[in-house]
Length: 203
Image 1: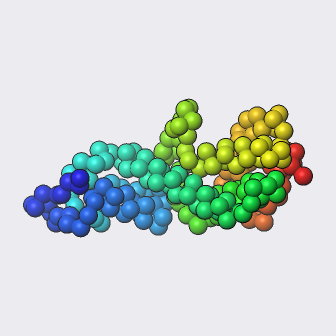
Image 2: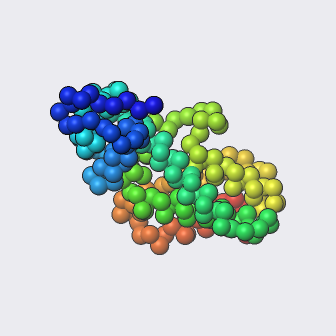
Image 3: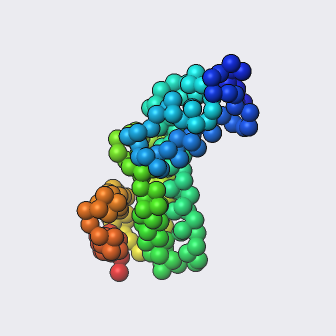
């Protein structure tokens, strides 16, 4: 249930839906435009035409708002990856290999489309240090499942599968970050995916 701002709030009351969701949506909009460094909870509240106290009811500080944005971003990234790999039809070794590459490509394409949200996710603005698998971010779990699929279809060995995500994820993420920040050309990304496949023994 949403909480409405007081009728005496200086910027009016909130009349049209879920305030918490509206605050997160507005914050995402601002981060996309201005970057994560300039996010202000008061500005978000003002743009939603509610008092700061109404916003503080859901987000007591900026960090809690950033955490909500991060949760959205990780869910959205996973959704994009799921959509990409679902387009690969078949239950074969060839399809399993294609899904690995599409998971990597979609990771980069999402970051390219929303670089400031990507910076918020991985730039130290929100915590992603989770230990239990159930708490891992969903994009990471997409990679785990894709790698398991490669093992199931005999594309990689058990030895290659062991901790493979700890090698694949940093390579994909590192290349994406370097490209987004302008340090290496975008064309290098496919070569990084080739390197990951070679490291896993995929031919």
